[in-house]
Image (cartoon, rainbow, N blue to C red; front, side, top):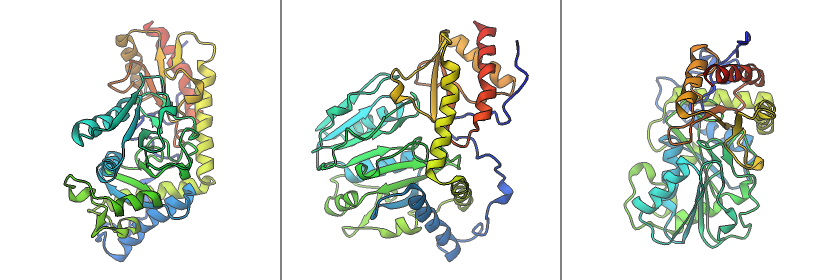
Length: 370
């Protein structure tokens, strides 16, 4: 029978992600709007972004947090173009974005000493192939495959190379072994449901040392430059951004950080996301027509939850269309390069009660088109 209870919030997109529960744009602190981002009020807001992000995430001493242009993509590219070159590179990819970084390293930077370790959707490559003498590039969570790295045990503590981690759909949702990560990138519009166009760049002291001791042989555009005269531009990590940010987006992100603090910090939002995954796990269990795309339960993403149905691609699209038409789930079709299926966001801005309400609708839509 057709369900009667609908999710209170039908927004399950994997990016931009749902706004936090209770979000009200009129409650944002807009005191910096219409002012220069170089003015005291603007710099204070941007510095608060850097400082509070580090505090809430519990970053180790000496790690720097900066706001950079062009979302997570800009932050990753900045790291690749600024840091890679002096050592061989191990690239691990198992979905679209990781494959994109691999392509950039091979075809744009044209580095020659590169080990490209890939895996199909639903799988992880053998992470134990990582060489501690090499730089390592990988995504923590495969946003388009629903497959995450289960832990950081495969990263050597006494490594010579740097680890560069795209963690845009993992930060604030998964436990991160910060001491093993030298560069971490994410964007506001993912786990915290913020607005787009701004990237976050986290650097370890080892990454800063590389920046100050190595100059790439290729030219760097202004928005990629992290050093001047051989020294780190410290202002980037204190609120003096490379280019003009949206202060409205900054206010929105600060609102999200306040919400995280009100829940109890990073541990609380991680637990909330894991509880969301458990709702989907319970639904999938015992139903033979639906499965997780991830083949190993230890690698199941608790943010970008990817599901496969025993239907052809056209019928999967019909399921997605039915759910949208009923107003119970928006934007849950699989990523365009991924196998046909569903992708449901399970980050902390989504309520478990809404996922519980959604699950019977998925079954109803499946039976309608099967």
